[in-house]
Amino acid sequence: MVEGSSIQDQLGAGMRARQSGRMADAHRHFEAVLALDPAQPTGIPENKWSPLDRSLDWSAPHLWRDGERIDDVCARAPKTAALVDELPLCRIPGRAFWVLGSSLRL
Image (cartoon, rainbow, N blue to C red; front, side, top):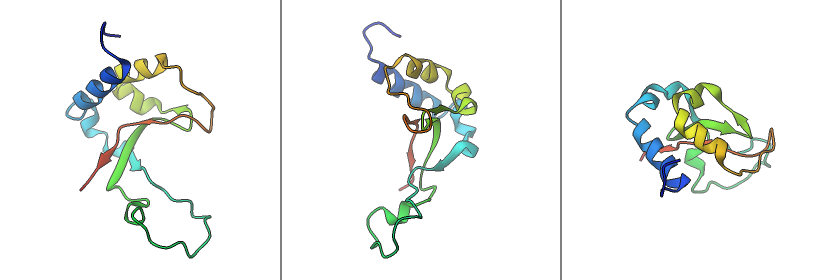
């Protein structure tokens, strides 16, 4: 960790640097951020989130998802992965936590 810099600052700086670096060709790792549960009862009215449901217009490469490390993506962001390893996060395999770099197409 850089002295005098918060982990959040370092994570943000690392993610910004990778947007034009190693993560630039990582589109194959991107997936929709919002995936509404298809088991929800039918008849749910359209809402502001409906257009983004399962859409790559709001997508992300996940470094961790549901508490599971995604090694292919973490290998592309080793400094970020190392910083996340230091965080006192709730770690429940199959449930928590998520770490991702989000991309919203306007």
